[in-house]
Amino acid sequence: MELKLTDNEVRVLGALIEKDITTPEYYPLSLNALVNACNQKSNRDPVMQLDENAVRDALDGLQQNRLAGPARGADSRVTKYEHRTQEVFNFTRGEEAVLCVLLLRGPQTPGELRGRTERMHHFETLDDVQSALQKLMQREPALAKVLPRQPGTKESRYAHLLAGDVVAAEVLQTTVAAGGRGAADDERVARLEEEVGELRREVGELREQLERFRKQFE
Image (cartoon, rainbow, N blue to C red; front, top):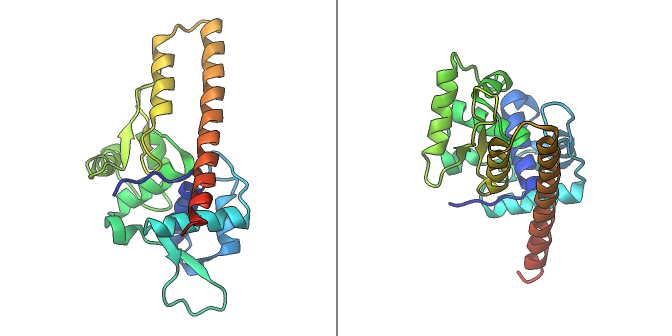
């Protein structure tokens, strides 16, 4: 199953997985609780401000991909929502924790992932993190990939592929690696980063508009 989730769908799915693991007593989540989880200022990059309609639309998209939906058998007057990644992918706890943090915080190094997954899963060593990443990368289709190493860094970053291939990030990293370290190059890189960010926002908006348009004819 090849996935191309929107940015909003990525955030909603990541929030559901995180709360399932870290606060199971409050899971599944009501719509209001899910909105708050998506908009947290801690453990989120970027910080987002989604409203209920945006989260509902994201849940609809995730449900079409069988990745989330209303909780089954929930004894509550308020509809609550759950993720279904285990049914689709049958993750190990390590894979699930790594993917969750990649969904919530974007590309990261194994060292960063080890520290940020601690509440969800304890990795004894960096090799254990690498093993979880390899399992995600070896799936068909792959759910993660390694990005070109940034100049002056020892560790490569890894990104999830649930929103499609990370083409923009690769182009940016290659441009940085090929350029010099002078002020003019730094300025060009800053402009590129800004342009890539703007393009990603526009693509996300176009995806959501297309999804809403398609739903009108279902």
